[in-house]
Length: 301
Image (cartoon, rainbow, N blue to C red; front, side, top):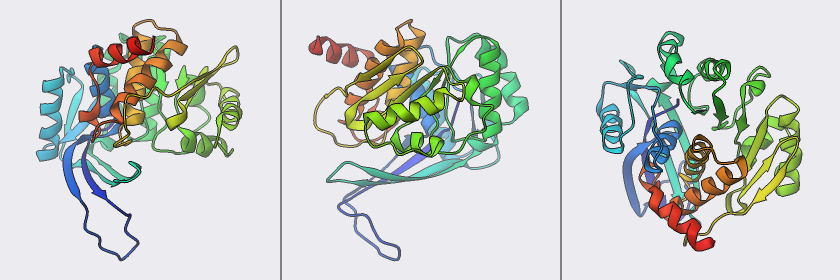
């Protein structure tokens, strides 16, 4: 369950200051949104993916519907709105491959409790329920409640960073913040593995069962009350664009859990998916297929 927005990406040699106009080197329009990107990642990895969201009756919404047809993503709980489909403005530093993003969620932010109730049986019959924060927080919590009540494994990717009510944490089997999101949630600095572990402890104390802090080029840290495991990043080639890395990881992680992998193996699998995605431009279109991930993991032994 999550967002679709159209990604409007600009590559530039330098970020503009307020009031400044720069000439960029390239421009791309394509499908995006954290929930949608993660759904595409899951489908390309061989998962049976159903996407719960809401789209406008407009060109950007049509872009999403065509994407889901092409990727084989089920849309029986994809609702329609008269509100415009959302968009994301993405500025990419072409030298470092880093990015800054502004998201206007649009229609997906209007998914209602009544519509979500229509999806409750689908959620209850799933192996994994994966969601994020590019939608109304009350709907996020209600979706997690449906999944938790049905004993479905829940994964909350708390992105974009936001403070969460205490009632959400016990609903999360897995919480997957990056460094900045973990810092926002806990108020603690997260600049290295040791600090990530301390932030994870603070989140476990709030009722989360497992915390996975994604660390960019440093891989990911898995921590629960029994285990602490640092999984290194998996190098698949030169980094071109990190925009879709977090979504690639979460989609891969969810597929791994759905297939019965251990949490540690699912994190490693997610790192491989992310490792390939950053060697390509874009978000949804950067998501690798299963054969590519299996080949990368086989080469590593």
